[in-house]
Image (tube, rainbow, N blue to C red):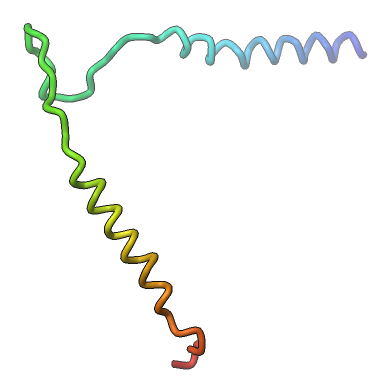
Length: 78
């Protein structure tokens, strides 16, 4: 009984390990940007700016500072 259990457990581990080994072998550098498909010379996209990151930073800063002005004496009945 014990030998059968270990044999079943070992085969289950091997069978479950096969898909991950197959996925690990896929190292193709695929471009998922349609603007780059079908071009013979090497095409690269322009480097983006940091404006969106700064807008997010300012928005979160306003939210965090706005919480400091919350009235602590408010109730849920307001």
